[in-house]
Length: 124
Length: 151
Image: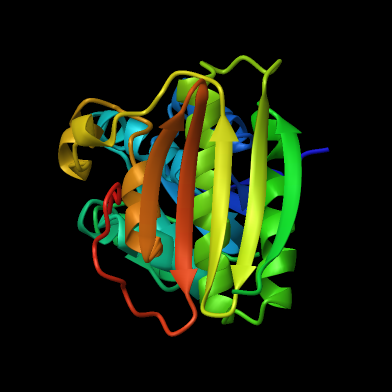
């Protein structure tokens, strides 16, 4: 049984991916499938919520890297939020903060998209 | 010098990476390494085993990887052995994330991570066996560069 899962939520035109568990070379294909699903559905503005992501290896980071340019060319982006400190350290180790928007909270990530004209869902 | 050695053999499949991380974590904790050092060891060993699976064995799962955690008073070394295609550390180039992103590249960070997280990374070839030894010193000092050392 995989120790990794991706949850899908939407916030207006923004796709939120909730990552949970350990993202390594075995489970990276699940993240890749999730991003490909977003692309198929033309949901190119993606916020990754890493609050429950416990571990990431370079294979997981590689998935983000493989799709970032393509999503940006289509007017979207991947913004990464709420990483645990030890997971953020891995992103930082490879210089990913220079390539990706990495912010403290999901709300902040959504706000970055909204600055570009996106509208969130109305509060329930 | 007194030392303890703990061994694990896994099939060459990524599905066993979690077991490897758990094995290394257990023995690194028992050896009283700091929580930060334990995390770094887990990740470096994960990267090394992933490289063996994907590059040395080309993703074929019928081979095996031998892992040993060697605990000495001043250091902890993880030794990883395989019989696949050898890695040439001299041919390795440091990754450029912007270039990789432009090329939609998914991999190429493993060795970089191992070198950054470990105090010492060495590659050897003994007959058909490739050996990668990664060492973390307890006092976090980086030793002098010895023969055969890479990183």
